[in-house]
Amino acid sequence: MYRWEITRAALVQRVLAIVRSDSYDHAHATADNLLSAGITSLEISLTTPFALEAVTTLIREVGDDAVIGAGTVLDGASARMAVDAGARFLVSPSLDPEVIRTGHRYGLPVFPGVATPTEAVHAMELGADALKLFPASAYGPRWVSDVRAALPQAAVVPTGGVTLAEAPEWVAAGAVACGMGSALSEGDRDTVGKRAAELLARLADVAPPLDPP
Ligand code: 3PG
Image (cartoon, rainbow, N blue to C red; front, top):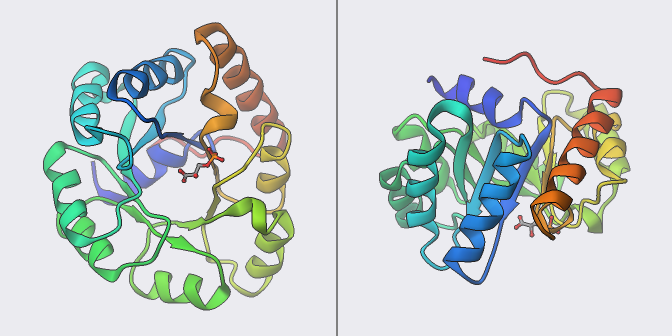
């Protein structure tokens, strides 16, 4: 897939699930719950032990049914390792040009972290494929509508403390998608399944899913 197609596939449901765990087994089980619940886009955070092994394993397991990326990619070296592990996209809480350059060199979309209009413009100049507003809970949906009034070209993915109840508000305010970790993935398989179904329905009420690539 081309970079723009992966971007679209990663954001098509308007939710990008985040798996951040303190063990490989828990991360794998969490990802499995999310994928079984119908979530088609998720990142494994590199703070997770053996995160890149989890990325490789999940990609082998899901094939083309979902896009699996790497999150918390802080530098060029980590970006290159994520590329080698097979990650389909890279996400970062911060803005490091080397992460964007490395991802793009290998055809991967990159969603760097921003928290100000200046950082958003800088990230777009560097070619960022979408912007992770982090930590979203410190700002609120007004950030998206106010910033996009001036920068309508900004594809914003608020992440960090986004709740099930607030996700539709973020999308209604103009976010292209929400990044969601704990609010979506905690609990057993049944709980995650119900929560994901509810979330996808609520998001679809606010904005249609993006056209699939
Ligand atoms: C991230 O890993 O990017 C965020 O910290 C996820 O935050 P959440 O668990 O509050 O959604």
